[in-house]
Length: 168
Image (cartoon, rainbow, N blue to C red):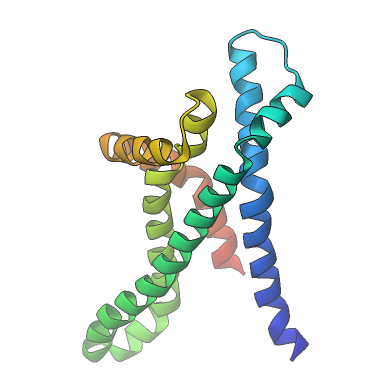
């Protein structure tokens, strides 16, 4: 039973690390880059203190993204299986062979599309000093306005993840 429990525990540990640590560290990195671009000295202690003031917003953002990914996967699985069952009736042997790969590609595309709308939230919060709500709205608007360019920029590193997932 521990063997079956470990992957789920590892998954939840990754989610918690993302929510409580990764978003915060990403914000610190963005603030440092912002100072570098402005040719200002990098003061890690000051940057950390400033980002700690927004820590609650970063945690909420991480939670929102984690929930959206979870809902996309659960809802997406339902939709995918309904659509796939139609194809299964017409070509059961072929469909059964491509179903796992098709599902993986479906999740890949939906995650990239989701990220198009939310990936700019933390940079907007840090660089433009906006609140979480305003940064989310700005990120969604920018995602709509620049959908294809953001899609391909985000997809490039995700392709490496996709290859690793297929090999596993």
